[in-house]
Each structure stands twice: as C-alpha cells, then as structure tokens.
Length: 280
Image (tube, rainbow, N blue to C red; front, side, top):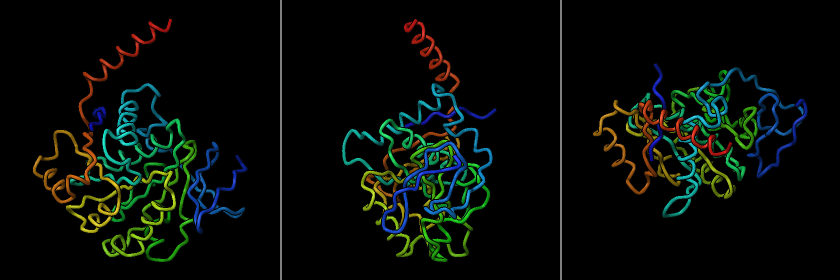
C-alpha cells in the first residue's frame, strides 16, 4: 500500500460506558478534551493547536485525505485473510513519519461511516510524540500504567472534534522502556483490549524494532504491522532487514511517506473539477 504525502517546501459530556474497570468510548462533543475517568471530578485536559497535518485540519477533498481513506479501506476490507483489529505502525529507522501515519490512520478509521471506535496507543516510550501531535503538553500515559499502577481509565484522553477516538499517550519516558514494553502486564493489556473489544480497532505507534528490541514483542502480539518508509531516503537494505525481522506474514503493507505528489495532486485536482462540472 502507498500513501502519498506532499513534500514540505459542552460543558456537559455523556458518561462513557465502562468495561472491566476502564473505558474505551470517545466523547464526540466539541468541547475540551477530557481524560477517560467517568466521574464529575474528571479533569479537563488543555489541548492546544494540534498538528496542521492531521486530517481534521485538511480539506475533505484534499489529496492527502483521500490517500488515508485508501489506506483505511485496504485495512478494513482486505483482499484476502482476516480483517486486522490491532495494527502496529513502525519504521526501519527514526524520522520516517510513523507517528504522523499512525495518528491519521486512527483518525481516518474513527471517522469512517460506520463510526468505528478506535484506540491509539503510543508505545514509543523513549520518545513519545502522539500527545504533541494532538496538541497536548506532557501527560501521564502508558509508562505510568506499566510502572506506577495508574488506572487505565484515568490515562485515556479523547481529543475534541474527533468522535470515536481514544488515545493512550506514552507518558513520562522511563529508564527501562524495554522491560516495561516486554512485561507480562503490557502483553496482558494488549490481549485484554483485543479480546474485550472485538468491534474496535487498535492502532499502535511502535518504535523501530531494529533499534528497540522490545518492539518485536509488541509486533508479534498484534494482528498486523504497517511499515512507514521515507520515500527516497530509507535504504532498501534497512527495509528488507525490518521485514525479515518481523516476518512477511506479519507485515500488512508499506506506506511511502513524503512522496513528491506534485504530478498526482495536479491530476487529482483536475479530476475533482471534472466531477463538479458533471454535477452542475
């Protein structure tokens, strides 16, 4: 699979349903983002301006938006095999844009016409970035759940304007991320979420397995892995090494990020103009 991304030159919210001690429903209101705790003392999280490259900031008919819809379709409606419910998004080396792809993929699935409930988990605890993409400052998350027994229901956050999406941030970077991510508690969390929510999707922002050994444990605990490649920069040998490490059966596909879309975008705009003329 390919993803073309243009080069850069209410005061009152509904109480979410609870499942076994934690919640996974999103607040679709247009108010401030909230944490997952379902009581009147729930703190309101301050959400600054989120990344301008997130889908809600783009025009509905913008080329990049359509590419994420294509990626979503290929995941939700695979040509063969079982539909994956838990998907890790990773890369061969840092800086490929995996967090950007993971965030927008989660948003795209959450915005699907069937209103799929989606959980985005930041497992890159060495350098967590999902919270910043959505406009939050440092917040507690997965690190606190695994090391300090913080209740998961207190750590889930729901960004405003994006219904059906819940986020589990990476939290404070710990001294022992490898031990935490490969722990029984982490694997139990993945099993619990996947078995409890058979109608939900889980998107995981995963550090490069070549550099973070614990990422291999997570990659084998999910249904499938999407590999993000920085087009024109990442060597074939590094991508091949990663795919061999993960196993070809586990790799769902490769996303080409930062592809020069000047020609494709122009053709796409012409296609939209053609459609509008037909509608008149």
